[in-house]
Length: 187
Image (cartoon, rainbow, N blue to C red; front, side, top):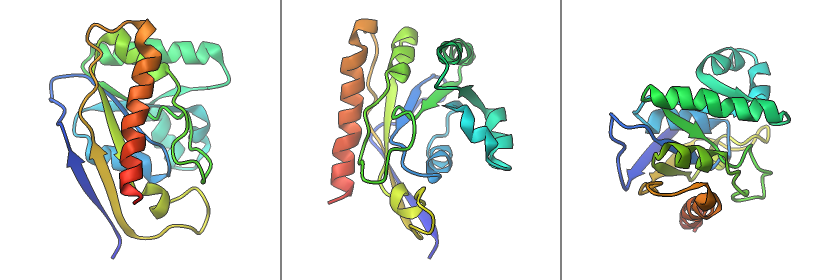
């Protein structure tokens, strides 16, 4: 049977625009499924610790903007590197939970970085829900198995006219969209 995916799109990103792609983070499969689902060129913002994984880490550090979450200086430097990429027309992908939550947590709180960056650059946020990755390829050893992996690309959230004061509201709106879809997927 193997793994197979089903991608549903409420809206499709335009090739000539930059976006902030965000998704729930549940599995090692999230990165692969993001690459399959999104055709626009983008870079991940990801945690530096993953560079230690053999082979994966080699490619990861060459294709990502790395952040050491324990360092405020590193977190600020991410904004500068992301801004440079956005100016070249590349999009950014961030998993706003800031890491993979514990197995029993459906969707952790979102960090504000992705939303601040999107507001600063007035680019749309593209919420994406991965419905089955935790069941297919969990971080718990010897769990999961083959089957479908559903993806829903939601209607974009505009940042046009928003200011940094709107960060928390935008964060909550995006999280709500993804959480509602997870509830639908899990019925």
